[in-house]
Length: 127
Image (cartoon, rainbow, N blue to C red):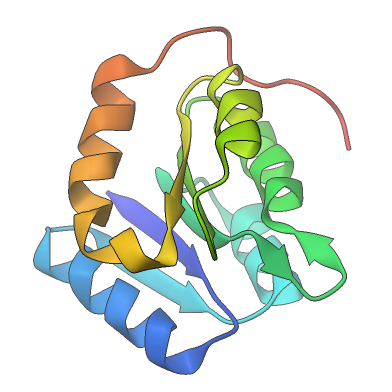
C-alpha cells in the first residue's frame, strides 16, 4: 500500500516513515503542502498521514485533494494535542482519524482501526 506522509518536522517525518515502512507500507515522505499536492495529483495513494498544520494550509486540505483521486483513502491527521472536536468532525467523513503526536507509535494500529471501523460515504466536497 502506498502511504503519503506529510510533516514539516524532519525528525518526526523520518520516524513516521520508518514506522510505516516497518509495517509494510511503501512510504512517500514530503515536508510541505505543495510537495504533497504534487504527489497526490501524480497518482492514487492508499494512506495519507498528515500533520494538522502545514504553514498556511491545514492537513484537511490535503484530505480533500486525496479524496478526489481515491475516494476511499485512509487518513490520519496528526495533531499536537488530542482534539476531540476535530476527531468528531473528521470521523463523519469516514476513514479519517486524528492522532496526537505523543501517540505516533500507535500509528499502524490506528490505521488498522480506521480501516476496520470506516463508515459513511466518502468525502466528495470540492475544494
